[in-house]
Length: 294
Image (cartoon, rainbow, N blue to C red):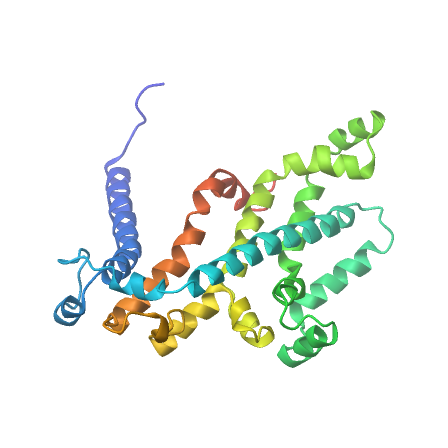
């Protein structure tokens, strides 16, 4: 193949397009770099410099203040547990409900789908949901943060549509070989569904990791607070929510409030960002599901 024929207008468009995307990427990443730099800055530098990407003097005071006790470490463990167990629960319920709904011969299939769609448009609200959680005895348990949102109706419909698009010849061949329905799901459907499962696993995981409102409603025991609730306490109080002053050195000088807030953002964001590279290959495929119909 020779060089592709390029017109002057096409070249100008490509240059402008690349310049715009580069500028947009810079505008996107600069706030993160500023927050990261501010979390390591000193009180004097934050006061004197309105904006910077590299601190003149690196200070770990904000992080020492946040991790002064094991409270933050415990809340990180709680968040990791809720994220992992919650994501697995979401995928389990979503897949096991989407798979039978993808079978066109299922009795009552349309009725169930209509009920799923109805739940997307109408919800009970905060107070009825709280009463249901309380009535089931889930208050002050981690399941109160997992079970009420075990299935996303929107994600369920997309996964169902993905299952319907799989070649029926594969399922027929598996049945001829004596494969049962659970075996068909485990050996044929799920291996072919890695892109969609990885995509929604990331969506579910981010939702669990960032969720703090449900914990405020259902969790009264501070020892069971996830990371986001604990970080919220630090931001609101600017001290002693994660680090008890009585457990610190009496000569300890608290870091600046702004630096604490920036360090809190880094601590709350970095762990979930580290998950994305492992799912990037499948995520790039999964986001295109349903976008092209042939």
